[in-house]
Every structure is written in C-alpha cells, then in structure tokens.
Amino acid sequence: MMKSNSRLSLALAAGRPVITAECLPPFGGDAAAVKALSAVLPPGLDAVVVADYAAGIQGSALACAAILSGEGRQAVLSVATRDRNRIALQSEVLGAAALGVAAILCLSGDHQSLGTCPEAAAVYDIDSIQFMNALKQMNEQGVGFNGHKLNPPPEFAIGALAHPYQKPAELGMLQLRKKIAAGADFFLTQAVFDLPAFAQWMEAVRDAGLDQRAVIIASVLPLESVEQARQMQRRNTYGPVPESVIARLGSASNPAREGVAIAAEAAAQLKSLSGVRGIHILSGGCEALASAVIEQAGLA
Image (tube, rainbow, N blue to C red):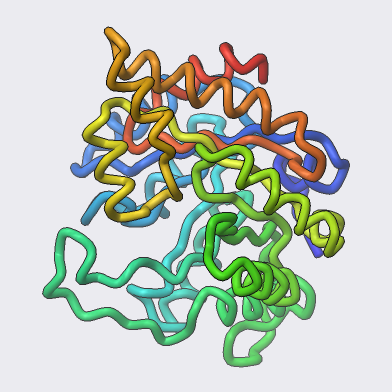
C-alpha cells in the first residue's frame, strides 16, 4: 500500500488522472545536460520516469533522478534487476528514498545480448516480481531484503510494466495478477499504436477487476520516421506498429511531426477509455516532444 506523500502517490490514491513522461539519462557525465532535459519537459507532470539503460550504457538513472528532484521534478526511478544483485538493489532503492524519489519502476531488463554491450555478464539474482515483493515488505513491514529492520523505512509507490499485446493473452493476464499480488501500485503499458487490440485487453482487465486493484497508465510514443517504426516492428520493443501507422509516416512531408500527431490522437482516445487512469509519454530520447503530445491531445 502506498504511504508516500509524493504528488504521484497522492494522485494515484485520489483517483485523479495522471500524466507522466520519460527521461533518458544522457550519455555523458554533465549535470547540465540533465537540467536541460528537465527544462524541455512539460510543466505540471505528475512524475518523470527515468529510464535505466534504455538505449545502451548511459548515465546513472539514480543520479539523473536526483538532479531532476533538485530541479523540482518528481522522479520515478526505473531499476532493472538484470544488472544488480539483491544487495545492490536494496542499496539503490534506499538511496532513492533518501533523495525523495516518488516511486520505483521494477524491471527485469532485456537480455544483455540484445543490447549494445552483449559481452556483459548479467546478474538476474532476482526477477522483477521478487523485487516488487521485497519493496512491498520494505514499505509495509519496514524490513530489508535480509529481514533486518530499516530505520526509517522507505516510502514510495511501486510500479511495473504491462504488456497488452503479449501472446497468449492468458499469460499476460497471469503476469498482471502476479505483479499486483507482489505489490504493484501502478502499471505503465507498452506504447499503444493498435488501439482496438488495446481496448480488448482493457476489457479483459476490467472483467477481471484488475483495474480496481492497480492503476493502469497507457503509454504513447511519438515516432520520428518509418525506419524507427520498422525497427520496432522487427524487435517488438514497444509493441506492434500497425501498417496504417507506418503508411501515415511514409506519406507525411514531416514524419516526425506526423508521429507526434499519431501519438496525440492515441492519447486523446486512451484517456477516455474505461479503466485507463493516466497517460505516459515515452520519449525514445526526444523529451522535447512530450509537450506537443500533451497540447495536441488536450491533456494539459
């Protein structure tokens, strides 16, 4: 159960729709670069979700979250268990709590062979569900991974990923139930391009009553080019990209501007879909596009 008094936790608890956006840590060690990212993100966000090794070996997500907090932003820290054992995970989340991080987004992480450093050794001491269980224990019982008392215990919301397009669909629903039982307060979905398929998934979520047990925040991603869309199709990184979306990008005189329009149209439809409690804007490293999506979708 969420105890934090962060803006995000209060919004989730009150049932108010939330708006979040993604931030990718820079590839260098300059704090000014993080501050510049904060400046281009739209005002009024309930939280900024700081990605963890989303596009390769980037700057520390925890350090980025701390700098964003200093800029007046509420940060959600993404933490992938792939690269840390339980000792490092506990140290990371306690440090995040001390820095005022609003929530932890628990990830297992893609296999390192799919990234930019395939020769790296993965850890995978625990997976994301075990990680959420441990965080829930921290929040509710005030004890760490090894059962030792924490003084004071951390207070943050627990987030997880939801995969609406996972096949078979029953497996995806099972994963959703497991994550809720483990302590997930909210879910960020894969980027939504296929709205009818997403609506079917949401119907199944509502029928199971899972939207009453955790907050569903639907994600949108402004695509910049046909090449980006095709690459996503091949890797299925964010979810399926319909051919109709690729055709729109291909026929547009300005594909990046069209990508923003497509994301804004999706966000406008998603916000009125029963069971969806918020919109998350993925950036893919183009944080400045979030403001245009929010404005065009009427989310402000």
